[in-house]
Amino acid sequence: MQFAGKIGSIWQRLPYLLFGLFSEYGYSILRPTLWLLGVWAFGFAAFWGYLSGCCVPAPDGVIERPMGAAMGLSVSNLFPLFGFGRLYFGAEFMQSLPAVLKALSGLQTVVSLPLLFFLGLGLRQRFRLR
Image (cartoon, rainbow, N blue to C red; front, side):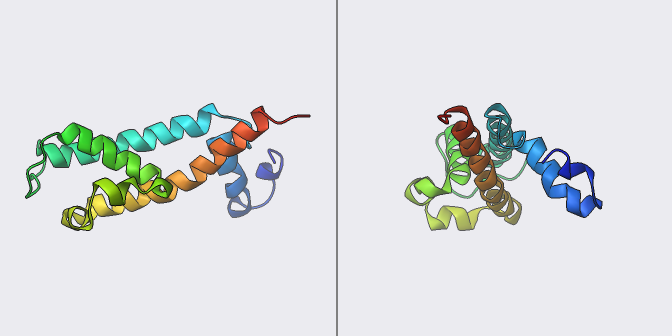
């Protein structure tokens, strides 16, 4: 796959190059984990800034622990299969978020799914019986 990323036009090589960047062609456990942590940290910082009201107007409702809520919201976006978002953050809370944070939530969800797949692929490669 590394050599397939060197031939053809940039649009033909791009999937191979991204696969190598994000997961070392399915052999790395560390790379997808670090990318997931980076996506989580970016979302956490954005949600915490909004929920604590430090840099933007604060939300209408009072949130007692904005740091914990931001951490939880970012984790629930990264792992949508577990349903934490519906359990702890209701529909009215998600509707009250600004459009930028709604888009960030969607982006976190979309980006996390291939990264979780790459992490599973790396774990499979590591513990595969030969």
